[in-house]
Amino acid sequence: MGLAAEKVKRTATELRKNLTAFGRWLLYAIFTGGLVGLVGTAFYFGMRYVTAYRQQNGWIVWLLPAAGALIVYLYRLNGVEKSQGTNLILLAVRSPEPIPMKMGPLIFISTLITHLFGGSAGREGAALQLGGSLGFQLGKMFRLDEKDLHIITMCGMSAAFSALFGTPVTSAVFAMEVVSVGIMYYAALVPCVAASVLAMWIARAFGAVPEKHLITGVPAAELRPFFQVILLAALCAAVSVGFCYLLQNAGKLYKKYISNVYLRAAAGGALVLLLMLAVGTRDYMGAGMDMISAALKGSARPEAFLLKAVFTALTLGAGFKGGEIVPGFFVGATFGCFAGGLIGLSPSFGAAVGLLSVFCGITNCPLASLAMSVELFGANGITFYFLAIAVSYMLSGYTGLYSRQKIMYSKYRPGFIGQR
Image: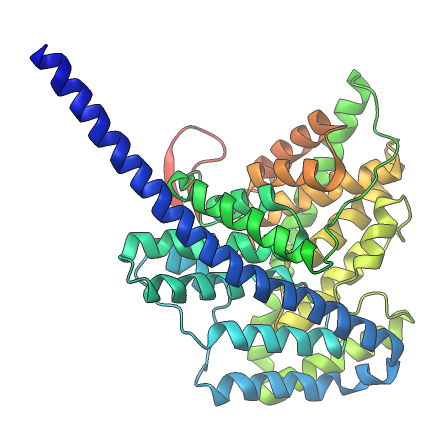
């Protein structure tokens, strides 16, 4: 009886500890998801407003060079000489690196400026920085220790991503997976999921519309389409490597030839405008969500993926702020639509495979990519999507958007590498 009583006592003690930890993190998640959800929703509608304003007032794009200089001025005014962007958030999740309070407002305002004047960029990079910054500051307010600060930072990242895209599962998994590929921070599971769901609910309550797309032409589970998907995913892996290479080297080229940061930003804006005039369309300005939707419906120009990659490299390399993932969606969807049609797949289905494959190739996040396939496209075709994601993950090697991301285990054999 004595041993049995002692076992019951230990079990009860463990249960109390688990319930206490659960209640504590659920409370933190509610605070974080609520605050970040509101800010993320404001960012969502801010993005919609500036995009609509630019589309209705086309003259404003001619001020893009001045907008680039303004962004540089705002960062310099706040004492930020060299912005690490999303890399700082990733570093803060696995090290004592602090996140300055000014980072959130700066990325919020500067990303809206980029999109208002037509810079080719995304929005999720801003969401990750915004959410991570707010989560970190809440953690400091709650007097959390270093390890708990890492968790609440991920909690903020997932909440902002969810508010912006309406994909809570993808958002939670992405925040836990992107920092150190191969190691999932499962201690953050409850807070990230809870914050993501709450942030999504808040965004929807204010009228934000989640991303959903109807994919046509999903093939039957036969041998031929499996090989076609493998081929398309392999091509997308190469595209993702090229996209990352462009983004990583554009900034270096700007710095090599233009030392003054104000002139660099203005020159970048001017180059984007010159390229816009050369191609004769404004389809590549801003995030390009309309072009992504068109590709997923089966319509894309053959050169669209390459032009978007160049537009984005010119924009972000010059110092404009925004994200790289939505341009990656654009590149993947348009390439997949075109190439998929060439190899015998439905262009709509090829666009979905391309979007997921390039997303995985540039972020090294296969589980988040799989979750995204269901949240964006539904479960029909999930076997093909998972195959494409796996192929792209392996063949894209150790490239990626974020220099501070660590790939902990080899993609080719079971072994620890700690790459980058």
